[in-house]
Image (cartoon, rainbow, N blue to C red):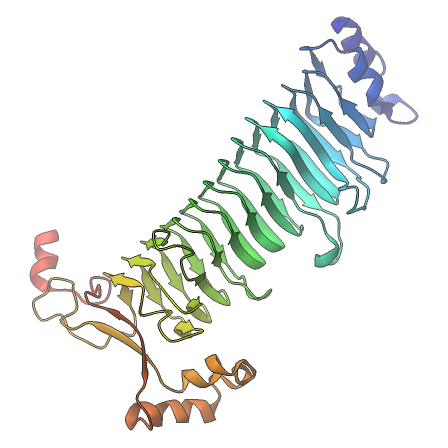
Length: 413
């Protein structure tokens, strides 16, 4: 039976056929656990796989959808899809028309090209699967009308690695704990990643550019965000990295560049649920950090804040100062390092002067950095009309990236 499947494919090469071959009979003829290797050419979908098997295309087989549904649906365990091109899904958000729909466990979806689809890959209650090295491009629609490049729903212990996503709405992880999202690239979207009710994810070494918002974490404790590059997230009301009621996360070694807000966090949802934010670089953002709520408690160690238009903004007094700050590099620090130990001789303190106007009155944001507000800010700093509000204090600011001590340089050589 397995040989029969191969013979059918190779005796009628699709390139010589008047129209694409139907894929479903070839799948049905492949025994459970078998491998179907498609000859180069075109195959007509939609198709469904309901048994464990491997479907390979050698990067030369194209599965063409009917434009009204999902191109290839999998409802089994242990299915491998490799080296295929899938194109032409429907455009229904209600049906979640996708290039690939996966259900079941222990799948491998690797090295596939998926284009002209509403949703790219949809994992629906899928566990212990690997989605790797796929290239997904959505339909040419307005941003709000697109689907997600990858949508993961009630799925656990999966690895999403090394995929390239473009022209889609979001990368969505909903009610999906304990997944690894590593080394992916996404450009031209709304949310780089939207993580909802999905605790204990590892989000590492991803590159997200030109999206409305970078990484948004909602109600998802215990995350690790490490080594990600987020850039040009300038719309959508969010920022580079956003946390809401998601405690006990580690945010380290990330680079957030040219975003509306570098890092946006609320107060810890519980006393023991603070974020640890360390060794990150926030540069060239409109606002480096924004704190909303009326409390703090997060920990900020060894971060770099460079060339942000405003370093810190807050929604209420205490939202910034209640956090723990130590060893961060601030490009606007005005102290000295007389003993050459790389630590500022005096604490770094940030106060609000005229900044308070646009922070407390959002409509005034339009006039931020206008000559009038710049003059008012200068006068406030020169001779304050009222006591300025202290936002934060870093008792040991890091100057090693700014000042150099001759003795130390000689020793390091």
